[in-house]
Length: 271
Image (cartoon, rainbow, N blue to C red; front, side, top):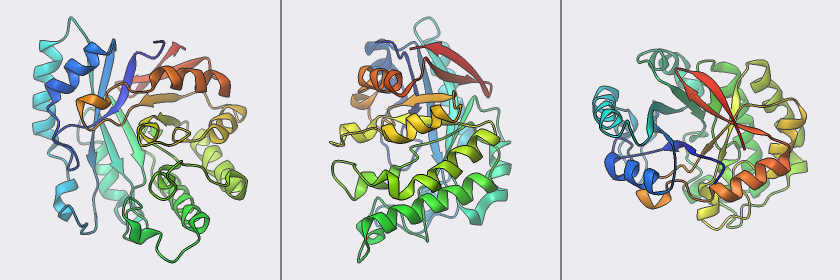
């Protein structure tokens, strides 16, 4: 396996996971990884969702860091453990997100979009009574707004996340959104930010990763080089899944390197 770092991982410190951090680390060691970056969720201004109260998405960062440092030391001779976070961006909490990003010395910050118009595309209500492509386009427009308004992050996570929860195979009409994707990617490049290849969708039966090959190729054509790889695992069984396929996809898209962030600085590793 040429990709040895999983840079998108959640444990019981994230509202949607019950995983033990130690079990996640042991799964990573068993998978042959040499680096794991935990990226627990922090989402301000979350709406009430069917499964979670609003406050469930605000991270207890001190407790998270305390536990991470214990395991970082315990497994130092076996694997590198990095301190990251996934911040769910919304236009309503730009300042709160900026303050939070500076609150600790994170190694890595993923920016992402989970909420549009008070709804999470994870739930069917986001798509009810709509052409799916229109629902996708609204999500991508919201991503562009967030990318323009936020600055303190390293990569944008799962750029076409929205398609996971409407179309079971994850396909959509890229050409219909190509102009918008170009603006998103060019804005990221202007801000010297990267993107993430997220492998979780493949676990759910999708034909492509998030983002799809068309976005990966376009990002590379525009000069994009910073790309991290994350399983988005919320349980030990998902750690490092589909990384061999991810390596093939990245090479096909024109990449020679993938990135790992430590102390907010990218390292480049050959695929």
